[in-house]
Length: 302
Image (cartoon, rainbow, N blue to C red; front, side):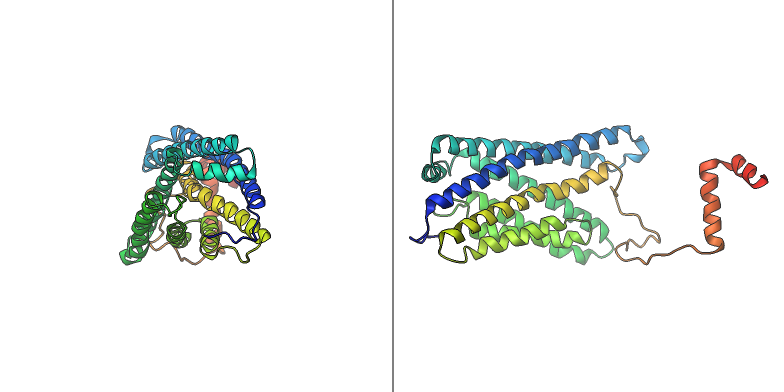
């Protein structure tokens, strides 16, 4: 993207450096959240009786894989950001160092780690979509094809940079769109709304570009795209990991969702309230479960 002569790149670079430095700092907190979910999930898993652990082991493994990749990615990003800032000395110098280290292996390793996290996370969402819709296999075909396409585009984004050496924005926008589509489908299964919203906004910003050829417009655009790009990257890992966390702590299903009539259709079911004698019967059953038959008899006798 050619920069108009009227745009003061010193001001734009100064703003960009501050935003990216802040993003790197927040990413450390994000890595801490991943570590907490992995360790707490493992703790609950180990305290759970063996008969109730069935199906959760794979989620524990995925939890630690995502955590390790995220910590690795954050460490690489901090290393790259430190090198650029340390050698810059000024906003104009930051641009020069940004270009100098654009093809440093650390940067591409970080992009590779993020790609791996996204592939794992989207794969988990598609898998759970497949389990829920196992009685209607055709419904899983669109997200599965989109998932395979997102893998190909994600790998191409890392391996095929733009002519100036920066990440290919066309491929980056396409990848964000494909990941968003997977997220839209997954909303029907579990809550990944933040990932989808941030991804749609990020993809739109990547494709749209600055609205005017002024310094203020470029500063605003750079701040917006850096913020939403970070949020999209963060929730690409956090959203699937939160699903894993719910499974490992026993708050969500591991093998298949609960079904009342056994037909597997659990996405749309009316709410039924107990009334009259049925409610009294249920209340009696609950009392027996908690108090025991002998105590219930004593209560009735009293």
